[in-house]
Length: 304
Image (spheres, rainbow, N blue to C red):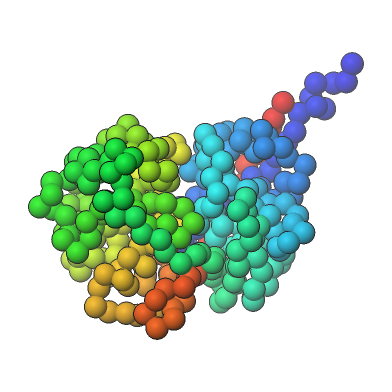
C-alpha cells in the first residue's frame, strides 16, 4: 500500500494584496501558479481552505498568455478583478511577464492584460445597464434593494438610484448622499444574497461621490454574500462599471476615473482602483481597470 502522505497534494499559495495604496491596504487574493494538474474539485477545496474572497489558479493556455480560474470559498466565479491584478502583479514580480500586453483566458473567453509602470490593468467589456423596471419579472423592486442595506430613500443620491451594471459580472449600484450614509449602512446579508440570486449578481456596490468622504471620484463598499463575501476591500470588476455609471450620469466626460474602496470596512483596508475608459465619442466601448499589487505572505494547503 502506498504511504498516505505521498498521496497528498501540497499546494503553494501566494497571498497578494491588490489595489494597494503606497504598498499598504488593498484586497488580498490567493494566487496559485502552475495549477495545470489541479481539478476543479481541487481548486474549490484550496479556495475554501485559503478562505479569502477569491483565489486565482494560473495554468497554461493555447489561446492566451495564461488561463485563470477564479473560485470564492463556495463556488466558481467567471471573473475577479482584484485576483487578476494580484496574479499579474505576482507574475511581473517573478519576471514571467514584462511591460506591455499579455492576456488571460477565462471560462468565457480571453481578455487583454497590460503591464505598465508597475501596475497591472485588465480589460473589461462595454457596460450593460438593467434599470429597476427590468427587474419586475424577477420579483425585485428598488425599495427592496434599499431595505436590504438599511437605506432610507431620502439618503439615496437622486442621480444614482438602484441600477444593475455589468462589464462582465453583474453588480447592483446605489449612490448615497454622504460618507456618513456609506458608513452607516446595515447590510442584511440574507436579503442581499436572495436579491443577488434572483438577478444573477455578484453583489452590491454602494458608493458616494461626496467630496467630504473622498478626494477621488468615488468611494465604495462591496457586499457579496451570495459568493461568501460579506465585504471586501477592492473589487476591480465592480469599480469598472461604477466608472462607466459616473461617466454616463455626470456632466464630466473624462477618460480616467479613480475609485476608492475599503475605507469604511472594519478594520479599514484602503484601496485605489484606476479605470481608463475606451470611448467612441461619449459612448463607452470598453475599459481597463488597474492598480498595484504586493505579495504579503505565502502559505501551503495540503489536499488529500
